[in-house]
Image (cartoon, rainbow, N blue to C red; front, side, top):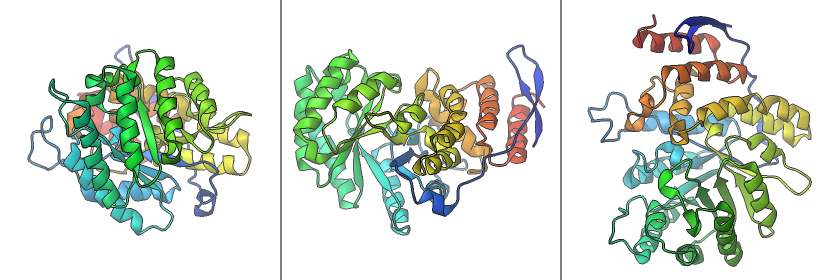
Length: 388
């Protein structure tokens, strides 16, 4: 246990004493999961690179890949080069391709390691002259590159398509074309506008119900090429509705960082697997909870997972796109990287009060690996902000 003074909304420091961290599950326990669980992993920036951090990107590849091994050690899969890794928000396509290459090479050294890789159109400017055919070619370019490396694909939502499409038929055309070409079944990612405002109206409608119908039509028409769909709309009701309408054999991967525990547990009509940014931050708890679930201990699963939900809701609070700051902050507190510097300079995207509350909630969720280390690092951050 450790005691630290944390700032409060009334501009005072309040003593906070940590509790006991969670016990990491054994390797035997992590081999028996009855859910597929991917953590969308972040990248570790290089703090000593001589760059302009708002304009340029420098990644510490060694620390970044070490974090993937940490996730694999806990029995979790890695969802590589997703928005958690600042894809399209600092990490460009050449950087993403390099990241994917390093991660796939690391996975080859670990029998059974699960990894999937994001493909999109982020190297294509969404300018006035862009056409639907341009978008198809952009997807094809990234798909060809990742398939050549042996990667399983996550087809990410396209900002360019959201800007150019005139109707649901444009989405049907793009997805139908690329799905017919992929070698192996893919995961389709529907990322909501709360995560990325540029994706508002995806699938051709601002109404999520109408958009869902179009997405389901695409999946049904190409079911043999779709492993599953990940939706990130922060609505358990919409996810459950869509889950129940999926063709047989097509999985629902929850992307709901507000309601994941309930959705993974499931109901009498089915359950969701997981592809979650929050699993980056709460990996030990996610692993321990999934181990309980695989033995049929539903109460034990919820006992571990439910305390993490307030933490996740805080990390992903609006503006939700800044959630990555909390993910990297927690990795730093836990000694999984040596600094709190981010790609794009996004360590500044959340307030000190936000980070102080994150510390409290992370402790209550029992995901501070070493409370003494976490308190020491939090104290350094407070000192930099004039609260020594």
